[in-house]
Length: 142
Image 1 (cartoon, rainbow, N blue to C red):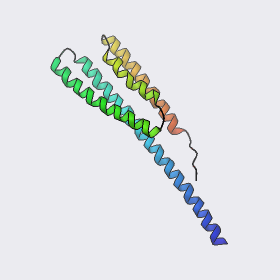
Image 2: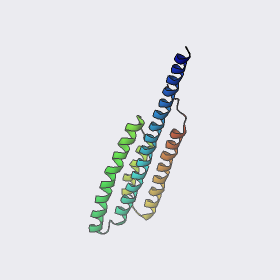
Image 3: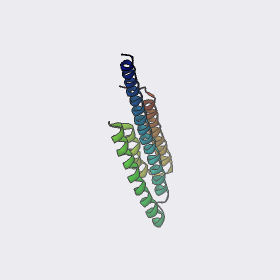
Image 4: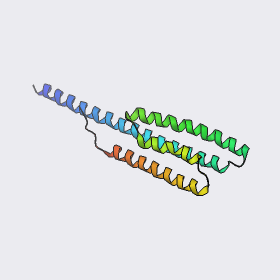
C-alpha cells in the first residue's frame, strides 16, 4: 500500500512539473514572438523614415525603398508568427504596423515627426499589453 501511494504521489508531482514546464515554454514562445514583432516593426519604421528622407535623390531612394520593402516582409512575417503563437487577433500589433503607410505619406518634416511619435505610442501600447499578458498568472493543469 505504501509503495502504491508513493507511486501515485510521484505521478501527480511529475504531471504538475510537466504542466509547469509546458506553460513556461509557452510563455517563452510568446515573449519571443512579441519581442520579434516589436523589433521588426521598429526596424521597418527606421527604413521607411530613411526612404522618406531620401526621396529627393532617386538612386538613394530606390535603395532605401528596397530595404524598406525587405524589412516590411520581415515585419509582416513576425506579425503572422505573433498571431499564430497568441492564437488570437492582435489589434495593437496591427495598429503599429498600419503606421507605416501614415509615415510614408507625411507631407513635411513636422508631420513626419508627429507620425513617428504616434508610431512610438502605438508600439508602446503593444509592448505594455504584451507585458501584461506575459505577467498574468496562468492556471497550470496536471
